[in-house]
Length: 235
Figure 1 (cartoon, helix red, strand yellow):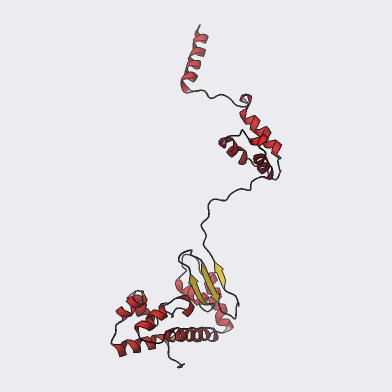
Figure 2 (spheres, one colour):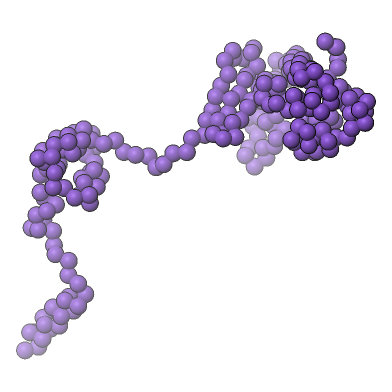
């Protein structure tokens, strides 16, 4: 494999030889023309070969062997990573880290993050279906890839008391409980205590005992009662 020949140079050379344009290459690779332009201008690091099929599509458009561009990309990324790591002394890395940590959230820039994270990350990939992210760190730091996933969750669900589960299973205790009554019993909390199934049965009976609750009084009856009380006072 040629030394010092990168993906950008090979693509530019083939476009010129075949009389093709960047616009056609972008369409064939199913990316934007702006992306291809930045890639060829070396403003973007070529994507990792195992992250995308972009190289196969570009190679087909440029009439190159299918693995030609991906091999060059892998070599180029490794060489650039080595250069980044080898070109920084301990003192320089320490200063970079301190500057990153001293930057507040209002002044944090992409450059702050790139200068710190770029040498640490060899490649990364995002699954656009699940938004799971896989990050391959520099092997001088870690040998295994790290995976992060964004999972949609509902509100935190409190732990269901074992006694409440037993209460529900025993139909002699909970067989006549309504949906609303079960919801009320399930919401009860005991600060570390563990009530039994019989406790929930007794609470159910308490909920049904009219002596434990005042009957609702509508507004009309309440006004009438007040009026009668005033009349009795006048007489």
